[in-house]
Image (cartoon, rainbow, N blue to C red):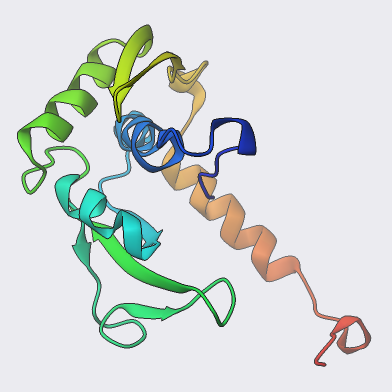
Length: 155
């Protein structure tokens, strides 16, 4: 799963900050306590502010070429999505506010621009959702898949 923003909102920081906050807020609804992120160099500090740390066991100290050879990604991990102990107060408070008010309209300010964001992060029918069942089903489906060597494009 990835978070991307459209060209219409490029430059507003929506993909880098507000979508990430929403993602962290949603995580606890579905029982996730750890999140993984691939950050562009210009978003690593935002990751630190949000409580992520660099996962140095991947690539060259946490960095590698992705999604192509002229771009670098940094692997980061948030080990406490529920408490956000390493996050700065501003980020922790923003996420906790979203968790309290899952469907809310907020006027956010970034780089002297005001943006109205309609957060609708309450997951419908959540009582029917079970993380362990989803993982078990995904594993079962993965084991059923077979690879046809003729479908591989190695060039």
